[in-house]
Image (cartoon, rainbow over all chains, first blue to last red; front, side, top):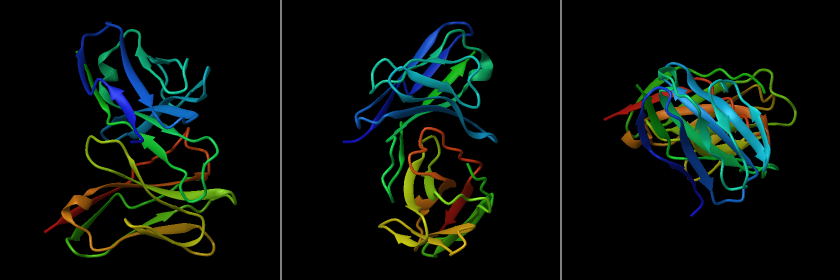
Length: 116
Length: 111
């Protein structure tokens, strides 16, 4: 089954304690992205990757790091989490070329992060 | 990427047809129109995509007029489970690495 898998689904942590949210896709997609979703602000892109070892900042990259060492994995790293990073996070993947009529992004189930 | 405008919210009763219109005046020649659905605390899910005229699948229909400056997502005979946020996105094929979701339209279906 084609899917994007995020772990963990829920995480409560303390300020300053480094954490990693993993994301893996089994569709051989070139593109992968991370978004955060906050009430009233919608979905905002944090980082994206267009292929292995190719990453770039999205709209809200401050406080986050990513890496793309393998095509299937795109972990999100919070080196020193702060309460303002409490949010719902989504990982997504998609094909680079796009297929007419069905060029879509697939999203993970989400990770609800609380930083206290 | 072209900016889109959609209603913030809509209400409907079960069994009715719901039409959500999206305005995208600055759509480019190579842009496609894509709609996503998002349930609370879940990731967005692709519904339908089109370039012009009409596209239909098992879930919805998408109507695009000749000038392509707007589009309408049509959900036939909605049920309570169609309560969700619907996003209209405009961009070229293969732009999935940077999706601009905007605020979307929150659809509430009631009995």
